[in-house]
Image (cartoon, rainbow, N blue to C red; front, side, top):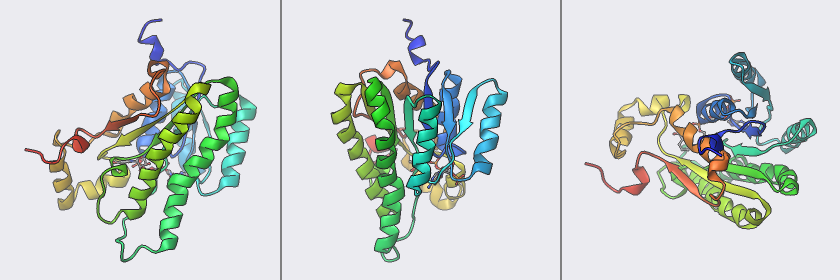
Length: 257
Ligand SMILES: NC(=O)c1ccc[n+]([C@@H]2O[C@H](COP(=O)([O-])OP(=O)(O)OC[C@H]3O[C@@H](n4cnc5c(N)ncnc54)[C@H](OP(=O)(O)O)[C@@H]3O)[C@@H](O)[C@H]2O)c1
């Protein structure tokens, strides 16, 4: 098989959470362009529907799978529906909410809520898709973590803790499922100019962040797509328990010139 063909995903089904915008949308487009049928998730069906229509209008294959990661019953129903319609070959657990409150302001209840959506829900969803993958001895689980899994920033305690836990969970899942045909990996983005970050990155404080990047620029959302396609594809057949960092060199450096 040609190496280029090993990046194709024809006939595969991929569920991408948080795919109505931002990095999830970019990864969903990439997988669809590579031939996958993509199931787009988001909390708001009205935001997911136009994205599905956009892909279908381009001749690609997509459907909606809307649910809130905090709602496990809705999550379970969406997974059941997807499995009843076929299967899930690739899960990209992309949802990651943020809470930028300081330690002074953050209550234990706030902390628990974010851990629930960013970490516990990712575990719950992985558990829901795994039995079918393991039975078929084939599957890809990709967790979107962050460079914040290893590098802390102020006013991010719950987010940093959730992403650190998620990065560790990737290794734990990989250790158990690798021998059974399912790989589990992470993508750790750095500073991406998504809609959510636009205002902050365009502020004077954002300029300090930009200077911290050895490449001296923020990433375009599309620059996440190659990492997702690689990890979802046969090209990554022997990659397991790995975190693929996409950060322009931030986490490799402690100072920039
Ligand atoms: N952007 C960056 O620079 C950066 C850096 C490091 C890590 N990351 C990680 O990359 C991932 C994506 O980041 P992003 O900036 O692209 O995020 P984003 O723009 O905030 O993602 C928004 C998408 O997530 C959905 N969503 C949010 N909460 C949800 C929930 N509880 N249940 C279901 N869907 C939910 C939104 O649905 P609605 O439209 O319904 O709200 C929307 O589709 C996150 O895990 C983030 O932590 C991003």
